[in-house]
Amino acid sequence: MRTREKLRLTFPSNCEWLLQRRILSIGVDSFLVFCFCLLLLPASAIGQEDSGLPRLESEILRLATLSGGRVGVAAVHLETGREVYLHADEWFPMASTYKVPIAVQLLRRVDNNEVKLDQMVEVTPVDLHPGSGTLSQLLDDPGVELSLLNLLELMLLISDNSATDLSLEIAGGGQSVTALMRDIGIEGITVDRPTVELIADWLGIEGLPSNGKITREKFSNLRSLVSQSERERAETVFEQDRRDSATPRGMAQLLSGIWQKEIISSKHSELLLDIMRRCQTGDGRIKGLLPLDTEVFHKTGTIGRVTNDVGIVTLPEDAGHVVTVVFVKQSILPVPERERAIAHISRAIHDYFLFNPK
Image (cartoon, rainbow, N blue to C red; front, side):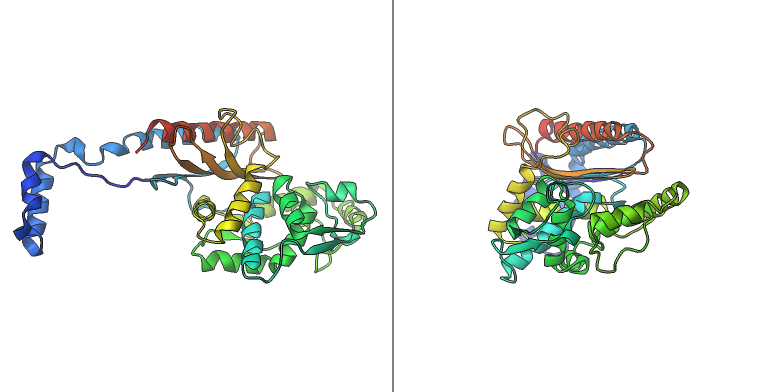
């Protein structure tokens, strides 16, 4: 667990005159005067504003035990830069939270006029993939076209896997997403596989086409060939796989960059945030214990023993915004219990930054 606070010093009046003397504005004399002023400070004047963060650290650590698994947390107050981490640089499977960096790369391509949000994309039978979403459930006989904006919204609003794999393909694939992360200075995010391949690896399915194009019927047939022991072994391997993973720090950096409009254009940053604000999954996670009118921009992720939620929480009374990342892996408890742990951690973070303004 690591914390960081910006240090703010308040000098006693009996040393202010020394700092204001122009003849001491340069060289060794200035350094000596500064040191002298530090000696005059009461012990409580240095680091006195850090006192609450250790308590928040302890509370997050305590609440993490409710998840029944390994927890990674990042909390960054965007207006002041104060931050708290639990296992900041440990890798966690992103599950569907990896759809956020995919969306960023897709919108970067829109910014560069390489693709357009209103361009139409055909959905074929081999594009309908298992897992979350509605496309594979509603379209038994594809022949429909959706705009790129439609796919982006389906991917983030309801975590549709078919829309995700089409979006990832148009974004340039996992390598392009990871390359963008490195270009903007984020080392703690890697995107590698479409969801159909990711789910196949988790289930222990072999024989998937190299391009990931497979009908639901063929996928189901391959799944039926996997024994229970093979399935359990595959899940263990999956949780240790560094592909499609992130560190709490890395995800927090990405969300901060989106909010600050540093990665994609202001127009498309606002579009992305608006879609994340309307996310329809995970009401019991980051949002679970927050006041009902709290505005949250977020994306959830769940697969096997992994349960995640990442986003930005708006505090009331102009108290600012907090990037909140909670990853849970290797949990032995049911999903609702993991969600409850995420909700408690989120509320602790919310309350600390609300009641300890800068």
